[in-house]
Length: 285
Image (tube, rainbow, N blue to C red; front, side):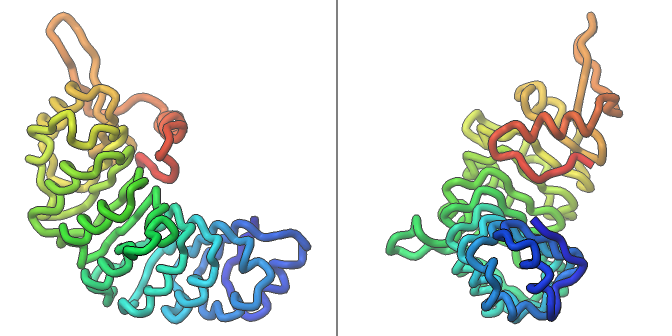
């Protein structure tokens, strides 16, 4: 494991100074040039790469050479075009991908993202995104129901999905998620603006999101009464409608009494949730 404030010329020399294989790398301020990766001794050993800020978009082709990478996170992706992120298709071992797409500062198209998440017909199990378990597509204006259909079809092991700040999804997007993503344990639909559809929770059947354990919907105009009724129907489901809060209640002689605050230990709650398979990198706050 190693961490750098910034990846630049000479970084490889410092990274390899310990003389041991490098598995995990944090670059807190992003990276201007990553072309040295192609000659790095840790090119074949790195399994986790976390980029704390944006990168030059030409660097996606060098990241695509990290074939043993299992986890990739990028704090923000600015002005990238479809062909620039295409090398991510080479990351066939990737299990976790989290990228903030920067809203209007992103040039990626819905078609380009559909292409990225489409498996080949031949040996799909050996290609990206077959092994994905955790996916974050945040602040992406091109997110559509067609993209979600592609992800659902081509990511059979997906357990967590974060679509927060994706404010321009079409009307079919949320109903499709509820009806078709059968293995999600975590779903973040925070800050969706006008495309948030509270009615999708009104008639949830037993077959809709059957394995969901944590639903995060911060920053939306949610009908709290509707969500409270859902929570009584699914008491093992934790629903968070605002920071440091999950829907909770007590029972007295008059029935259920719901509370506007959560008096428990949020950090302890998060730690407990992380013991559930599929729940890893998330926060209630």
